[in-house]
Image (cartoon, rainbow, N blue to C red; front, side, top):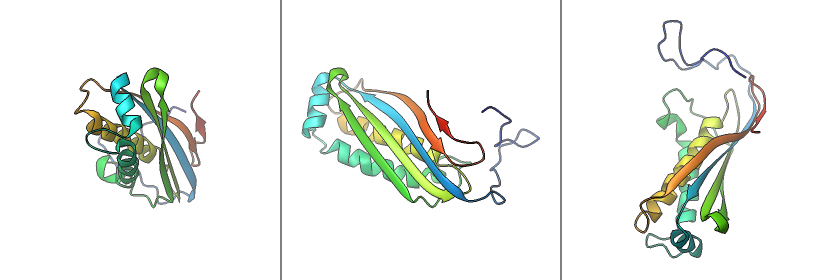
Length: 159
C-alpha cells in the first residue's frame, strides 16, 4: 500500500505520528537478514569456537535488546510495550551463511515492523563483530520485512 508520507508535516518537516486516537490491536512483525561468511569462519561460528565466544547466543540477546530500544535509535518510533521478541538463526552450510529471523509482538496503537527489522540487523551486526577477528569481508544482506499483522494499513506477507 502506497500513500502519503506520515512522518512529514505539511511544511515538509519531520514529525512523530500521533497514534493517540488509534485503536489498540494485536501487532506482529517478522523480519529477516542474512550474514554471509567464508566456509572457515562459518565452521568456527557453528562449532562455537570463535575467539570471542558464542556469537549466536550473544547475537540473540543483542537482537532482543535492540528491539526493546528501537525508539531510542529511530527518531520517529514510539516506545512500545513489547509482549514478545525472538531472534532465530538458520545456518546454511552450503552457502556458509546464517539466516536471521526476528519477530516482535505487541498489543498497541502502532506496528512493530521497526522493532523486528532492528532486532534482525543488530543480531547480524553482533555476528559480524564476533567474527571480524577471523574475517574482514563478511557481508550482511537481504534485510526485509517478511510479515506484518494488525493495524490500519493491513496485513502484509512478502512475496
